[in-house]
Image (cartoon, rainbow, N blue to C red; front, side, top):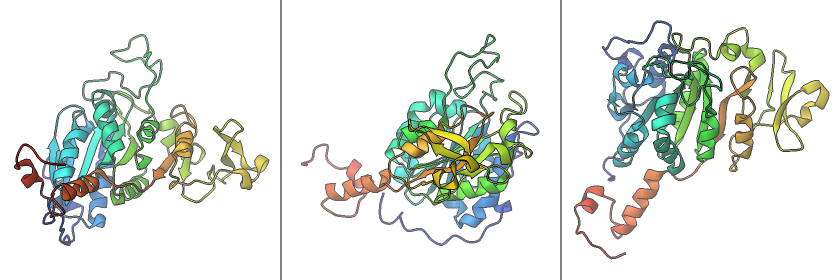
Length: 343
């Protein structure tokens, strides 16, 4: 982490084609991953970033093929360890844009520990978690987000495990940016990814993604075009949380401090919760994340939380500068210094 690598030149203009590699995209026909890939490739030119300073790190799973299809730097790493590897890269090279692409099994099972610590440390990463509520690459076992009673090859009598809510998990880990989108709306994905990329620190985005082979239609009850107006609750900062074709439904807090859905006409617009994504205390965002118990009930999408906190790399650099007597921070010099020092 030196002053030299922190200097970033203006990136030349690019197109979506520039971000598309020469590798054949190999997901099952109809997989939601195609839609997410298209959204990211379409967005990258608008971000004004350079391909040689962009890195996609993945773990293991269907989502983990992602780095092969981006014409940038990338690493297909090991199961669940993408956040750990990306943390090292982000710490060593502050001039890079580091993205993590992972799945619900990869990130929340073997990789759960690495994910929560990357979030709580506020490492400067953009983390996209593709949630299809199933293990796809290994052919249809239940995952940490599969619903109770889910019958799969590994749970023939139905899953007994209480599923994770990825947004609740990220908020509990004190992530500074937490959002949710879905693979059926490219514009919503692109805007959500744009906001996540612009955030300094750990940005976490859950993407509802259809696995049409092993868990087809898992989110159709809320993401199908005919259902979206009635079932998706779009969060907009500073606006009352309303939804429905005419905004007739809304969210209030009851006397027990719980979020619930009401008819706006019955309670009045003045009693509807106004969304505040910048609220330092994450309680409201957490209540919104618990509004639905699964993708068969009205479900919030958009940005739940976006707050500012010093990121891990910046704070580490500050400590290095202090440790070296306010000389420019150079991690190499520190590592090669004598084995003892005075604090």
